[in-house]
Image (cartoon, rainbow, N blue to C red; front, side, top):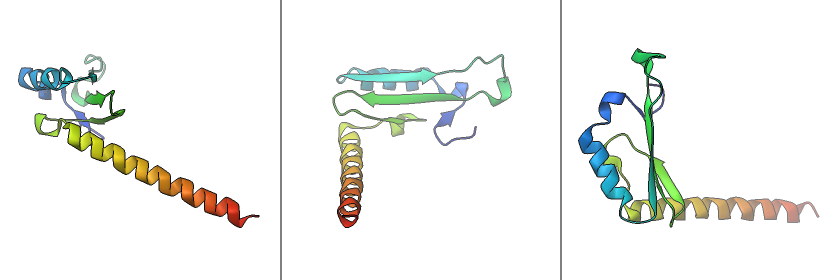
Length: 100
């Protein structure tokens, strides 16, 4: 495994899948589970699980049940991303005004 959001195929248990399905049913949400061809490199095979909320237009990778995001967590993540983008736009505007 190379990245923090990668897991082994064995970590995708029936309990984990059931929790993902339960989360997905709570709104306009999707779960994307990627499992590579295991015959290619069985020892180094890594999987990813992406949870996405279409209403909030926000998502995150998860590796276990406790990481499945709540609506509040996704909304806060979205708010922080908007604040960061707003600050970057203000900085760009200030730089453009300073060039005049």
